[in-house]
Image (tube, rainbow over all chains, first blue to last red; front, side):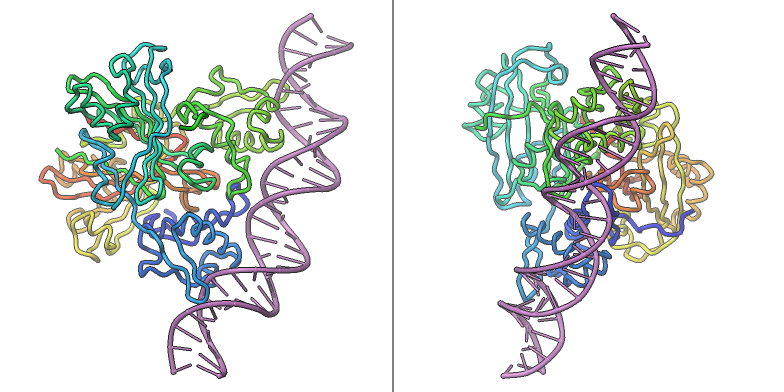
Amino acid sequence: MTGTVNLSGQEQEQAVTRKSGVALWRQIADQVRQAISAGTLGADGKLPPEMVLSERFGVNRHTLRSAIAALVQEGVLRAEQGRGTFVESRQKLSYPISARTRFSTGVRSQTRDRRSLLLSHAVEPATKRVAEGLGLTEGAPVVRLETLSEADDRPVSRATSWFDAERFPGYAEAYAETGSITLAFQRYGIEDYFRKSTLVSARHADAADLADLKLSAGAIVLVAVAVNVDADGVPIQYAETRFVADRVELSVSTEA
Amino acid sequence: MTGTVNLSGQEQEQAVTRKSGVALWRQIADQVRQAISAGTLGADGKLPPEMVLSERFGVNRHTLRSAIAALVQEGVLRAEQGRGTFVESRQKLSYPISARTRFSTGVRSQTRDRRSLLLSHAVEPATKRVAEGLGLTEGAPVVRLETLSEADDRPVSRATSWFDAERFPGYAEAYAETGSITLAFQRYGIEDYFRKSTLVSARHADAADLADLKLSAGAIVLVAVAVNVDADGVPIQYAETRFVADRVELSVSTEA
DNA sequence: CGTATTTGTCTATTGTTCTATACAACCGAA
DNA sequence: TTCGGTTGTATAGAACAATAGACAAATACG
């Protein structure tokens, strides 16, 4: 039985690990960002002075300033000389995952402005993984969509979707015109569809996602690999979505 | 429309970001570990030579060696002088999340040996967050359990659970004797219970979790915050589980 | 106005990370 | 045994991260 156990992992602080791959300023930036999300730091909209925080984390003031600078760069904090450092944005978006999951609709109430951008699209042969997800044979033609979602003018997710190119020819154009997966499906006579399965994992963002999601190196993404099926249970969409872990949580409701 | 888009984010490689908080060797270690999990690297059990990998990632051989050293330390790889570097363990555990989620049972078929350890326990007043989860008033006495789960002698998750101390007096002892949440509940007449909700997020592991889960600094944990309810819908357990992101994925099934 | 508080800038020093080059040790096969 | 391929070790310099101390600039408040 250990003596010192942190209460919950979300309510603790002041725990940095030295000389091990991740710079102190980044560890602190991550913790501060998280504490702001949890409301345990800057609940009144204002951060404690740099001297106080640097002592609390046990680092030099300059190291702490590097962490704050990173968060200012991200738009999480705003520093004003002589006045203090203030919280600029706090809320985490909560994405519901259920049989009726439609990412574009679930978050509508939580944010003012939500947009989806089509970055690129292509028709290509299905890889083994995609073929399995869509129930096709490997090498069958599929439409690939690369999309970016923003909320309040800040990127929140980056998705790659695949569709059966034979069943949904010109899907990319349909999506581009409607700006919605649901509306594009309606053009093919699909009035309703369901989320069959979702695999959730987490990892460091790769270079491409870092750029698209405007993150700094070392940032974490939540990865959701999902299969959507039509009313007959036939797979119609295979998608991998990378969410900015700092801004998003996935809510799995399993009520009957 | 960008021209260069990586196929899926899981099938790409060779993308490190310089001078930004996370050491190159750690970024590479993360990517190699991930590629091994995905089967895109070392599928034949053997890794490409250090020279090949270092060129592929665009770094010095020594930097790449640091990454490999970290993975050897973690038990992912095994290096043999003169022969090469070999994959030691590969599989990711998949944890199902549904109304019937019982973490201890879902993974049984995927692994030979699975154990849960009770690290510590205590009775304490409920924080606001815990009280809300359990439907109690803030400050009401709750039992807190700190547990660690291992599969094949390697830590996979670290959980903190809270229970109503008035309804479940001595719950910690019941758990210690049975080694199971489900069996412990049966002592209080609860034959069945359901997962009401699960919030999934991701973050860097804090110092305490790094130690318990035997991770190196900068590692990522998947965080699942869950509420279990009894047959009447009354909350009986509030839990926060941190999974080692490199070894675990969460599977959300939403079939009707 | 004057003072305390707070963020911003500067210089210097030390330790870690990354690069570069070279060579040793080991394995497997000709 | 010899040789090519591979991992292991050593050394030195460049770039970055962290510490330290001092002071400037802006704000808030009496």
